[in-house]
Structures are given as C-alpha cells and as structure tokens.
Length: 367
Image (cartoon, rainbow, N blue to C red; front, top):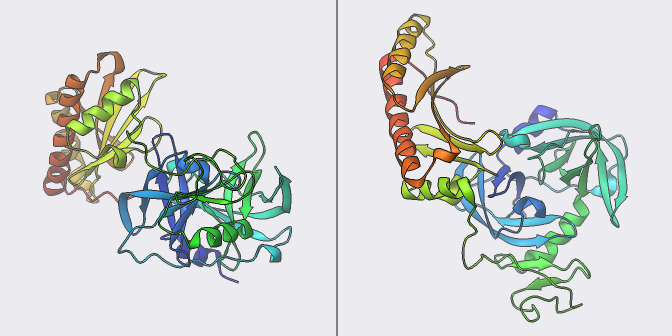
C-alpha cells in the first residue's frame, strides 16, 4: 500500500491536460502501450488536440484511436520526453468500500486529486459495468485515472450524474486493457471501434470509407478534416487577430471562448463572454516583491503608469500583477483588435522585465 502523498507525487508528471476548441479534459500516459489515454468525449471528434504536462509545454497531439461505446480515445505521446510509468491494476480485485483517488484537471485547474471510496464496484449502465465512486469528478476531470491504494490505475474517470452529490463513474480498467491490446498492432495509425460489434476499423479495412466491414454500421475514423474548423462571430475575429500576430491558434485554444499565449516571460489569457459582451485580455506578469519596503514605490509606479496608459490598466490580483485590456464586442474589429492585442503583448513583456529589475518583483510560478 502506498501513502496518498506518494501516489499524488507519482502521477503528477503522468497526468496530461487536454484542450480542444470546445472544452478541456484530462488524460494519462501509459508507458506499456506508449499512448495517452482519455475519454472519447474529451477529444470531441477532433483528430488533433492540444496537450500539456508537468514535463513539457503545450503541443499538438494526434488522436489515433476512438471508441464511442466505451468512451475511450488514445493520443500520441510527446516525443523525446521520459514520462513516468504508471501500472494498470486489476478490476476483479476491487471491492465496495475500497479507497480510491480520482486525479485530473477540474475546471481547468492544473492537477487535482480527490479521495473517496467505491460505492458500487459494478454499477451497470448501457450494458457496461462502471465503478461508482463518491470522490468528486468535476468538469475537466474526465479522462483522468482512478487510482487504488497501491498506486495502480483501476479505471478511467468518465462521467457524473448531474444534481447528484458526488455521484461519479469510472470505466473499469479491464475495458481499457482490452482496447489497448486491440489497438496495439495498429499503433500510429487511425482506428475506431465499431459501436455495434466492437470490431476495430482501420483505414485498411473500412468499407466504402464510412462503414464497418464486419457489420455495416456507419463509423468515422479520427482523420484530420481537409479544412480546419473555424469558430464563428467574435471568436473567429479573435483567432484571426492571433494569426495576424504570429500565434499558433491551435496551441492557444483552451476551451470554448478561451485562449492563452506566451509573450516573452508573460502569459496572456484571452476570454470572451457573450453574456456580458466583453472580450478580456489579461497578461499575468510577475508577483509582488518580497521586500515590504519596495511595495509603496511599486504602487506609486503602477498608479502613474495607469494615468499614462490608454486602453489598458495595471492591477494587483492577490500577489499577481496583471495588465488588462477590455474590449466591447460590438466595437471589436480585426483592425482594432490587432492594435489592442499587439499593444498588450508588447507591453506585457516590457513590464514583466521592468518590474523585476526596478522594483524587485518575483517570478510568477508556472501553473
């Protein structure tokens, strides 16, 4: 039996953040099969998603395998990085009342582990067994590992019952192992599992490019579209501006109407809320100085700069110093947005360096 803190430490580098144009989720690396495991609903019909982990920065990852019936997907792991090994456990050894950990990235928070117990080890839903647990599984946790007290993966966190009090469900590891073994000989090739007969459909055996050769059910391989899907409205304008400024839009996406980019040492988060009609760009700079004697001159500088700045404002959010820009969506065009975004990108890196050099501000920890 492993201590909880040792399990959490072990999984920190193996758990992966996943983002698409429509949402975020979690995955985990299985070295035995050299793939990242997640839920099919996390990749959401995308053949390419953004991944990030403790040992590597954001990058694009190819979706190679999808399985809608079992809600599984396998992604390509990052190259040239030694990710830790996590072992797959035995579902048949689990019992009601066993202690478990649900690990993931809920609500976009970087790494979270919630402890609980198995309420029922074999809850049947849609003809499949699921592990019912009382550990909180929140949005963003989907696709993360459910871990036993020995530090082994015994399930894939899959869904919750809305309105239920900590009613979470994980796909048992025996289904996962079966899918991994089924796909193993086709690694690095697009494949999908038929929802009707469980047959593995590949580019080499698909019938008429859309049907399972075994039973005739319509299927879809995880192939990139001929043309990238583009958002509509203000979200499209934002992505056009990011492209104009030389940013990789696919890497910038962090879910619906959310983007983040790096500019020098600063991180800029861009969000659009259609309900309040504003686009916000927040550049998270450095943190407040440790020396209390330097805080008063820092505040004076921030106030003086805010008097000079046009269309932007410096503020303190807890310990963080943030440079912000807010644009009313009806006033936002590609041209005006280009100027605003370019200004905040340029100023963010400048202020980040200046505040550290002149006022003793400290490096902001990476999330």
